[in-house]
Length: 289
Image (cartoon, rainbow, N blue to C red; front, top):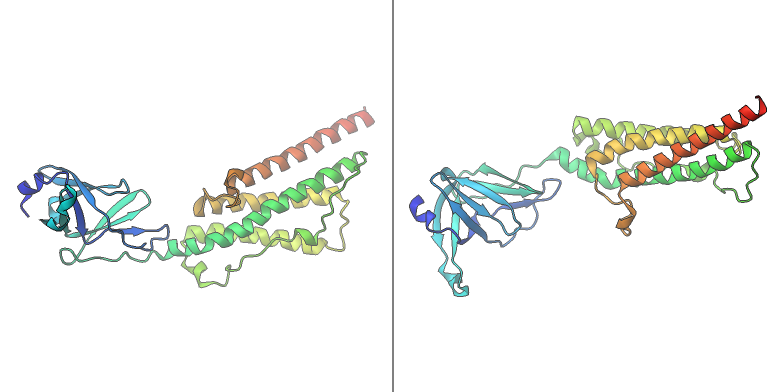
């Protein structure tokens, strides 16, 4: 490689050989792009190139095997060429990484990131279960507020029509039997198992109460609200790892993310409980001065 000649080629638009792999969030390759990288600078030690996506990479002297001009495309008034590399570049998110290849210009497919692929497969399943828990907490809070107010002697003209059966959580379609669960990292598997176990506790409690615990029992609603809140807090740990920026409703992105929706519901539930306790304490003070 004539490095002194390469210094004169700053500004060239070059095709990398091999082409850079663009990877999705699971580490799987996307379709190859017919992209020109620009030679931004060449020093005595490295050449810096820039992709159309805005990514930069610093290629060392031992990364570049050869440079060749591309006269076929010279008609557009720009300078074009080929940069044959002894490394394979990978672009994922904001990161650009490289690995050596066996022969100059030979592509090196990305290694399969099994734990990351398993996480990506679980994301829709987790979000479906989590989203349902947010909805359940909203309904539990409404029922708690109504029954607590009635316990304090306030007559409510309009009461929620929920039943215990109508508040059953949805269950995972993948956990625990799918082989994908065994492919998760230990950390991912741990937080996921705790969340789904909490969902199971809510489900078991509702099933146990159906037909035996009256819907007018404010204390039962308070117990269930604690259970669902605990479930959501555990679920938030999963969402933070798996898909922290995912909207609660993809058709209404202005409605906030899964996390912000959960945090709002948790806050309102705490406020409802605190408000009741304050009113209950005031009533007790009036009754027993």
